[in-house]
Length: 197
Image (cartoon, rainbow, N blue to C red; front, side, top):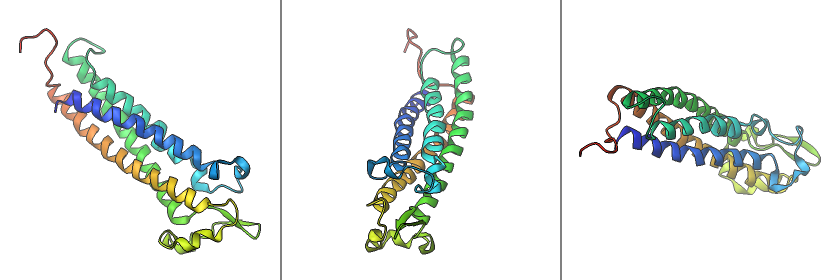
């Protein structure tokens, strides 16, 4: 596969993944889709760190767009020099995206391990913190939280989604860094329109 086509594929994959992270983080702010518990005392710190919005979202959207542009025809200059220029920009952008995806992965993983902040007898705390993540395998513990109802299932689903998506983002950004380095040094193998085959 040519470096340009690979860049377009990576970019067109990163853009929807970044939007998935943004939506997942927004949903974490409203347990069960209700704003009743959306305040600092009732939402866990890992949700307020906005790892899905900032790290897996906005910081991935930039390399996604840069990769699509690096894989496009035409250029900021003429010929292969312009494409190499965009590939170089894509290297830095993808490295930036790697940092964002790693941030999203680490915060979301911590959110899964610590568990949600919930209320038992009107006392809000991290009741699963001491289990070091073993509550994930014991679904009978999930009903311990009285408020918000179903918050454990909500958090586990959305943080698991963020972990999976950020792992894909790390992989794709890494592929794009390698692809763009090859594109900078070797150019794009696609033939120009109008050139003889």
